[in-house]
Image (cartoon, rainbow, N blue to C red; front, side):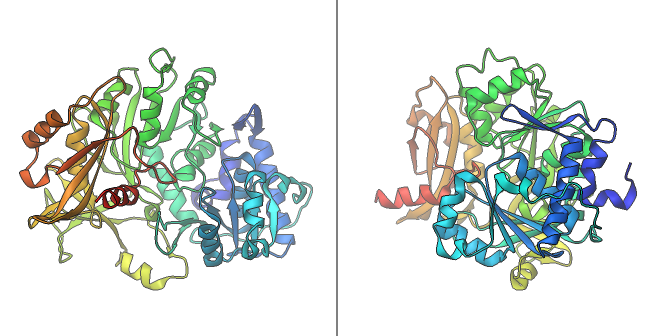
Amino acid sequence: MATGDDLRLVGGWIAEGGAADPERAAIAYCGRTMTYRELDHRSTGLALALLARGLGPGERVASVTENHPEHVVLLFACAKAGLILAPLNWRLAADELRLQVELFDPSLLVVSAAQLARVTGDPTMAARTIVRLESLDELEAPGATGDLPAVHEDDGLLLIATSGTTGTPKGALLTHANCYWTNRSLDAAVPMSADDVVLQVLPQYHVGGWNVQPLLGWWRGATVLLESTFDAAHVLGLIERRRVTTMMGVPTTYLMLAQHPDFDGADLTALKSVIVGGAAMPRTLVERWRAKGVAVVQGYGLTEAAPNVCYLPAEEAARRPGSVGQPYRHVELSIRDGLGCTIEGSGRGELWVRGPNVFAGYWRDPAATAAAVVDGWLDTGDVAERDGDGFYRIVGRTKEMFVSGGENVFPVEVERVLTAYDDVAEAAVVGVRDSTWGESGAAFVVARRGADIDVDALLAHCRAHLASFKVPRSIEVVTELPQTHIGKVNKAALRQRVSGAR
């Protein structure tokens, strides 16, 4: 069994996880399973095959695929060969994909059958060396005995695009060490064992699709159920049939499950805990899951931190609604004012992160890296509030903040009050131009299933819990909030909606 520095290299985690029982299922997908022995042997064979094709350590292999077992084989093959996997967002338009491919300049482009036509239909991407994901086994050399190259913990492993919904794409480079430390921290907070059955619905182009449970699960010998799409009824049934013990999702994931007619009667007794990321989960939704006997662990992170930064244990959720908790082990936090000076004790300011989980930098963008990381500290771009007990609350993004009548307003604060109203399931607030105050808040809310929101009563609720300058100037009831590719609220679309209505 590998120990010490060897475990900082992700390529060895499959052998470690399957040491006690190599025939245990590492992956379950669409009725088929892949054992730890098979995953280890296949990834080694693929690593040797990629090297035989002329790829060398540090070169990129880009992928355009839904969640799939072959993608996991590819990830561990890259880890063993010293290659860097760049999983691209298959939901992007061809023009957006092309920009990322040009930036990452992969030596090989691996594409699923469902995405092949989109990629080959673009002349620039079609000129790349393309291999179908489903045909990767044709490249493998399971009987090969060649030597794998020496891989070091500071070598790159994952290259995750961070462009969001607009703007020039950037790539956050995560090393083996980043993945090791973030998973070690996660294991200390929310331990996992070979007895766990992990449900993965978060897409593998997202850092959380690897580093929030799946990689830790394989390291610890658990079984990971991969789902390529999300369907609430199917997921509820899967939790029952496969006795899922844990999963990770964004608040929208748990809202859609809780709103499904099958939720109340679903047997969730095997589900020990769920992890929430992407945004704070509304209090009413947390209570809905707690009523089913499921512990809700809220977290905060970002791609550049690989991504785990803070977590709130389930037992603290009722006492600290809206909190993201305290830093994971091996993670340091600092709150700073606008001049970059550290704020001691309780207070509010920009959140900075330091630790071995902080990324190596933006791909081929030293200027952006230097702006984001100063003396080892990562500027998250988030504004946080720390209370007297050392618990953190994310108040908002510095870029999302708007100024109303000279006062700073962070949308998250307003959204927290809106979702505390019993009839509101989801809420989003954006800053819009206001002829009197410069800017004001426009709120969009989704009603809880079966509820009818009284907007005047909701505004009165806001006035009772917010300073006057924070109260939204308008509230629109909508059937759903627009989502980004990973299930976060698309606030750019909401701003456009407001602008288009004027």
